Amino acid sequence: MSRTALAALLLLTPVAAHAACTAPMPPPASEKPVKPALPQKPACLDAKGGCPGWEAYTYNDGIKAYNAQLGPYRTGAEAYARKLKAYADGSVAYANCEMQSLQ
Image (cartoon, rainbow, N blue to C red; front, top):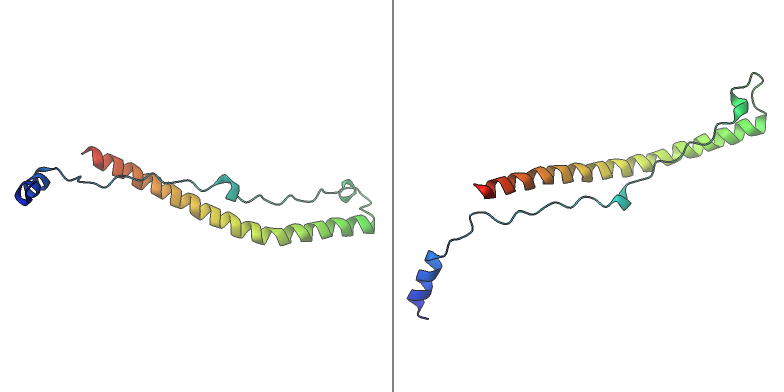
């Protein structure tokens, strides 16, 4: 094929007006952090006489451990929420791209 024929073929071939739209990928569910469980509240805590010292201390230690776990959980939850927002934004951009490709 001569160069002029090749150039004419390239000029007559329609060029895609839009790049292919890329669907966003959701963040893996395995990355979703698990909220720490509150320690079980002893029944004696609500009783009139209260709890024996050891039971109150054990519950208090459980609450302290729970509070210590909340910081890392919050960090992970915020990171996962950012990924979800990016996915939602990407979904809107993808839908807009598909709509533009129809025009």
